Every structure is written in C-alpha cells, then in structure tokens.
Image (cartoon, rainbow, N blue to C red; front, top):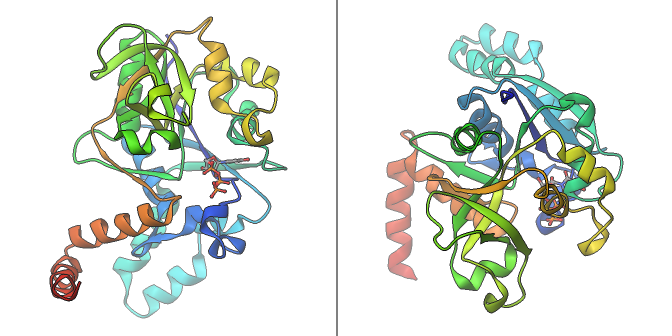
Length: 294
Ligand code: UTP
C-alpha cells in the first residue's frame, strides 16, 4: 500500500459568503483572533506527519504566499527591538512545512481545483483539507484520523464526517452506509449532495472538508462534467471512483467550525479566545457582563 506523504489545500474559491472582506483578502487569511485560519489547516497536516503541502490559489491570493514566505526585514526589525520571541514565531511559520502553490486559473469548482494538483501528486494517494473547515482536537488531528483509516481499510477512499442535526443536513453531502449503523468508520456506497429535505438524506452523517483520496481520482475528475452551479464537483468524481476504490466515512473526534460562514467564524473566534492564556479570562468576564444585558 502506498504511503500518504502529501496534502492539498484548495484555497482558490471566491468566498462570496464573506464579501466585502474577500474582495481584497482571501478568506483563508481571515484571522482567528491573530492567526490566519490557513495556518491552523497547515498545522493540522504537519501534526499528522505531512510536510509536503500544495496550496491551490487564485489570482488574488498572493497574501497566502507572502504569509508562508520568509520576511527577513520584519525578523531583523523585531530582533533589533529585542522582540526575539516574536521573531522566532514569525520564522516558525515558514519552517513548518514545504509549501508550494499552483494557480487554478478559473474558479470552476472544488473538483477542478483538486484536478489542478495532478502534476504535484502524480499517482499517489493524498490528503485534502478545506480551509473552510477548521477542526480543533486535543487528541489526534482530524486528517491524521483519516490517514489511519486509510491504512486500516487497505487504501480506501476516506471522507471526514460528523453526525449533524436534521436542520443543517441541506448544507452538506450526506453519506449512505452500505450496512446499518454509522459508528466510527464504515463503508458507504453513495452520498446525496445537499438534500433539499431531511427525508431525502440517507443518514445524518455529513462530509466536512477532510478527505484521503486515491491517485486514480484524477482520471475520474478529468471525466467529470460540470454539475451543480456549473462547477466541477469533487463529490461527483468520488462517487464515480467507488466502482474501483471502496469508500469509507470516518467520523472524526475534533470540534469543527464552518468558518466560510459568518456565524461559524464568530463562534470560532469566541471559542479560540476563551481558550487562550493571554485573553481567556478577560473575554470570559466580558461575555458574562454582556450576557446580563441581553
Ligand atoms: P466553497 O464551496 O466554500 O466556495 O469552496 P467558495 O467560493 O470558497 O466560498 P463561497 O461559497 O462563495 O463563500 C469550498 C472549498 O473549495 C475551494 C475553496 O477555496 C474552499 O476551500 N474552491 C472552491 C477552490 O479552490 N476553487 C473553486 O473553484 C471553488
């Protein structure tokens, strides 16, 4: 079985739900307090043992490249003003992983973005992490759990999933288990993309932005025609690939925030701020005070 050594982070979407900010700023650079969310995504891959990372960007996403690049002048200035700790933190961002970039020329959908990773990946299995889905975990990183599932299933396609409530099923791809029961890790043979009504959903388990895909996915992506919204959908190619590669849902343990959505983003900032040593107490006192006035 081939090892997973590479990850792809598609970050070329338009981010229309976050306009006007995303007119000039990639949504992956929106800070969770003081750290752009894409840093957390890269850290998740690194914690899972992946150092070779491809970020798929579009024309207006230079800020992402700049963020992971060395900024010698800033480091020098921080050191000159005796801010060595900050200088080291800035350098650590650059040293964390080997990051390369490919441009998706047009925003033709997530499937199209992943297809542009073909020259970097070749024919190997690989991990995919979407920047919209921020997952925190005190235990194993979510993508690490999916990679473990890949080895356990002898090279299966793995979809990172969570059980969600009925009222939000319409936002996600919902998996159809082969057998009854949806615990931990289980084989699936279909999924329904954004079911209009909960009764059309084959389970309450939704795919949430983490994948381990086989190298053959590129053959299927090349054959995939534009689907919902005129975009090339990754889910259509995954469905087609089930004919040759068994597919499994892995329910990951961490907490997931949908930060492509404004409310999800606000929740992430509050939770992250509450957990920080330098801010937690102040933020908690403020929320308590605020709650009295609501
Ligand atoms: P979304 O469906 O959230 O699309 O993409 P979006 O355009 O980024 O955001 P909204 O809905 O307009 O607000 C899911 C993931 O796929 C990437 C996005 O960057 C995001 O990580 N993506 C999407 C691409 O890389 N290219 C695309 O053409 C579309």
